[in-house]
Structure formats: C-alpha cells, structure tokens
Length: 244
Length: 346
Image (cartoon, rainbow over all chains, first blue to last red; front, side, top):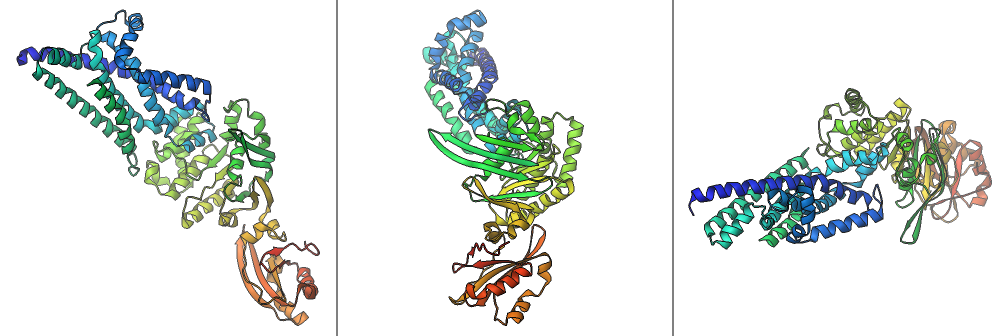
C-alpha cells in the first residue's frame, strides 16, 4: 500500500477513535463522578450512610467493571438501538464505550475521594456546611489531582476498549490495525497505527500527569501523589494488554 | 455559655460498646477560657465533638448560648438546617488545622462565609480583616502548604472566627506545634478571648496550656469529669490532682520522723513573711525542700514544700498557725503525694 492509500484510512480512523473516546469519556465522567462520590457518601460512617444503596451501587459497578468489553458491547445492543437508533457505526459504539467507562471511572473516583482527609469534612461540618457543600467545596476540589489522574487512566482505557468497536462497525485505529494489518497482512499499516496509538497514549498520560502534578503542587511543597498515579495506571495497563 | 448535662456517648461497633462519655456535666461561663485536660482516651475529643454535635450524644443535653442544640438535632445522621445554622456561630479549631490544600489562605477563611451566603466583596473584606487580626496579612494569597504549622493554625483560628462566633472550640489546637509556637498560639487565643469577649472551650493533654491561658479547668478520666472549677478554686482545693499537676513542687522528707507540708500562697498571704514568723513563734527548725512562684491563669501563686521536725501529731499547732495566716496547707505523705486532711481543711 502506498502512503496515498494509507493516509485517508488513517485520518478517518483517527477521527473515529477521537470521536468515540471523546464522547464516551465525557459521558463516563458525567455519570461516573457522581456515582463514585455516592459510593463514598453512602458507605458505613459516610455522610449519607445507606448500606443498602452502597451495596447495590457497589455491586453494579463491580459487574460493569469486570465485564469483558466485547461482551458488554454485544449485550447492550438493544439499549444502543434505543438510544441511537442503530447498533452499528461510530455513534453506536459510543454507547457501550460510555457504559463501560462509567463504572471504571466511578471506582477510580471512589478511591480518589476516599483519600480526602476526613478532618476537612469535619471542619466544614463544624462551619455549618451541608453534604452538598462538602461534595462541592471539599471532596471534589481536594481530590482534583487524583481525579485528573483517574480521567487520564479512563481515557487510555477507553482508547483500549475502542479498538473493539470494529466489531460493531465503529471503526477507529484499532479496527484499522485488525482489518488491514492482521487480516490483510499489511504489517506496515499495522505498525503505523500501533505507533500512533503509542504516541497518543504517551501524550495523554504526560498531559494528565502534568496537570495533576501542577494542581497538586499548589503551594509547592507537598509530595506529588506519584504512587497513586502509578497505582491508578495499573488497571489501565491490564486493560490494554487484554485488548492487545 | 456552654452547658452540658448528663452528656453520655456510647460507641457501638459489632456488638461491643465503648462508653466515651459517662454523664458529663460541664459549665463554661461567658467570656472565660475553659480547659478540659485528660489523657488520650479520656473522652476529651468526644466531649468537644458533642458540643457542636459533630458527634451525636447518646443521652444528655448540650446548650450553647442559650440554645439547646440537642433539641435541634433532628433525625438521622445528617444535621438539619437549624443545627447547621447554630454550628456556623460556633468556631472550631483543630489539631491538624484541617485547611483545604486546594484553596489559598484567604479562600480558606472565606469558606465559612460562602456557607453563610455572604457576597464576594463582604467575604474578602472580612477575610482580610481576620488575617490582619491573626497577624498574617501578607499571606492572603499563599497556599497552606507554604505555611509553617503555627501560621496554619493562625489561619485555622481566623477561619473559625469568620462567622463571628461567641464560642470557640479548640481541639488540641497546639498539640502538633513546638513549644515556642504553642506559646504564641495560646497568646493569640488569650488575646482574642479578651478583645472579642470570646468564650473558649479547649481540650488538651498539655498541662502548660491550662496553666498559661485557662480561667477554669476540668480533669477528665474515663469519660467522667473528676475535678473542675476555676483555677484559683482548684489551687485552693486540698489534694486537688489538677492543682498539684499545674503547680508541682518537689522534695522529699530527710528522715522518717518529719512532717512535710505543701503551702500554697495566693493573694494577701503571699506578702507575709510566714515562714520566719513560724520559726520564731514556735522556735522550730524549718527546712525548705522546694519552692516555686508562678502565674497560673493570671494569678500570682507561690507554693512551697517545707519540712518540720517531728511527726504530724507533734505539729498540729504550727499547722494551725499557718492556716490561720490564710495559707493553704496540704500534708504530704511519705510518697510525696499530698494527702487529704479533712480536719481543718478549707
């Protein structure tokens, strides 16, 4: 294949991946963030202690989190049709990607929010703040560096998941690598997509780490949550390897 | 200003019950600095958290500024609107400062004002005014991570004052600070108490804190208050554990057949040459084993441990003479602990 043949394929695949990952990330954040916070609030001793709700949400998140993405995608077909009117194509792939991303992000949010010092919550309670104030003014802003790290991890995981979107005709870089690189033995094209993915993932990770660190560094002297970032990376690495 | 009656807190976890507070009656008067001292596990933290209902007492009532907070509690673990409003008028400072690392110093102080729904202009005016009051006017735009422990606690105090509270609760506010900084923070609390007429309830495990700023003190053990009163009352109480801890004098008897006395001087008596009078009047040899003069809660207090020849039975008359001079006399037993002498004790 010549570059003039490859180039349009690549740019289309890139834009498909971009759109799938962008929209599914936004939805995963929009729904995963409240869900993760709710997990912390409803736990025993939490601000809105509700053991039953906590168990239910926890279980849903666990199942969603451990479901192999390709199965989730197939299982969600009728839901996808209901939402988008179709079960194939890039738009249709966004639905299972978002649904897969929500519990993934929610768990990371839970971990990040739980690390906020309980003393701060107590201080705001003593000022007369209600639970919503505590979420808005304490839990989210204080966990922000970790939440950004969690977002990075989620984006990277979703890039990994999006490689399977080809199954439902979603396209994207992963699909390109499978169809051309693997099925048509276009090894060159495969390596180009692999290269692009590697560069994109590295850039996202770098940008995320940088943002998290510069936020954490407000005032400068506190230790950067390096360990936490590394820990948060682990599931992503596992997911990528599952995909690959 | 703060009254608790029959305050009881029982923690239940997995079928086990721990009684943290066991019928605590506390009365803090308006405008005083009241110290609750005790070892860790004595229930001090539970007590101070029950005062603004961060912990809900199992039984008993808490009244702050004439308002029965326990009646406002409402149901469930969440605080209702009235309780939150009442809390916003009770300042609280913490051992670990509990400042938001994501906000500047000024924004930290503005937080309680945001909760009170004040306008941006009003918030920043008040915050800068408070920063000035605690001596950190130049740190408004700094982040807590850039401050020293003492500065952080000053910010914590400024934040606690943002809601114009009448009452300030201090939860081991100086326990994470070095002695020098502790002194300056205590001085600040004392100044605020005087300038603003602020009633301060503080808990601590450091006797020095009580000694340097408290008007009244209570000793807590195993969830109960075992001694309480104004510092001068405590010092005038024979055998008071708090008094001897606040103001220790050392020295042991040189032989078995000696009487050791702890004499506490305050007020008028402190100016009289009682020891030489005693020696001359009864013609006895007096050795001074230890002595100290100190200021406790703003009162000049002297304490002296003296030794008289002969057993206590032989010294009833000289002891009576000392008591007549308006001195507080505690007889010390062989272990060096003051013993309660009922007869003749004030």
